[in-house]
Image 1 (cartoon, rainbow, N blue to C red):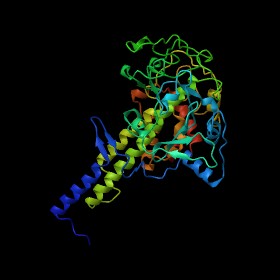
Image 2 (cartoon, rainbow, N blue to C red):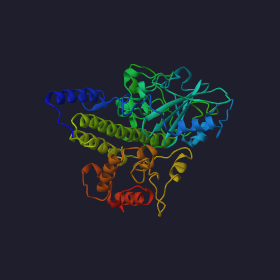
Image 3 (cartoon, rainbow, N blue to C red):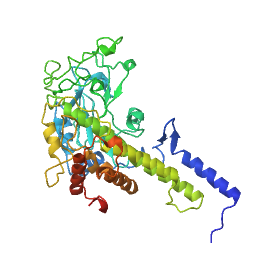
Image 4 (cartoon, rainbow, N blue to C red):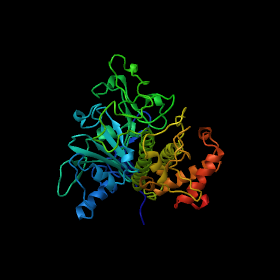
Length: 440
């Protein structure tokens, strides 16, 4: 039989527990920031398990080989192994990479992406820049030396990248972001003029500064395809000159690249995807850190180790709500004119599926009034989403069902018509295999 703790021992236990638990969070003015370098996350010391680490394992075992090309190095081969289409190509000419000296409006960096991996290529660059979303670690960054080698090695970053890629711009977790800047003719951003982190909520006039953008968008205007001539008045950026550009040949030589475009639809999908990945990672980290805190306190107080505190329930509920809003495109910027891309990206992206018995998919694009035809993020099928702790997933599914079934009539979901809700509900019922029984 265990004797109850004495008053002194209890105070010591509580103090020790609080000291240990405090290390999990650094408190800011609005919300707690998770120290992801400590348990239970252990970002820098944990063993990754993601598409890039698995590719390295296949390379090490000899199961696959990377093909080197004299012009682009390992680019095409890496894209193939990661299942990334060249049609996803976007060109960014602002010097916002760690290879800035080799980037300019005449030689932009090419960025390619799939559902869970991103690849950056710079002409004559020393390395390929590769990143992915690890289900338990969030964004993990790698480089691959652009020299022919018998056994190419994907080298994991050990802290340099998260200086920029783990901040309030990424939901305070290791993540990805799309930046829009006021670029000088050299491609160097005028940081004093301000920058924007853009996603599907951003107004068009704040998007894509420092990027090339191909495709048509009617009367909408963005910051892409042009530079700022003087830092004194960066808002003199000529948005009209950069509008509805479908051919980049007058701006740069595109022959070194895998494609000749920088597709506007790919950019819009990228903006949604990066934010959603960060929200998914935040939900994962918040749940694990809060439950770890509870276990420390429960042990000190000799309570059942799995007992949930009210504060933990509140923290999890808060990240679930943010994730739900992201999934359902709450506050998405409404399109004033139709968008049309300049490549096969839209078609390829929409055909990936999965589809229900009526041929409907959460990857189908709208592009007339909003990004997606059925506004529920396709990342609900992703491996990082599946990596969210089960108890939190259960809350997500409950909230999602209440909204889609019409039980939740909160005004912030008013953009979802009854037809939208019914269609999303039906698509998920047929294509998502791990839904709770009450969905069926």
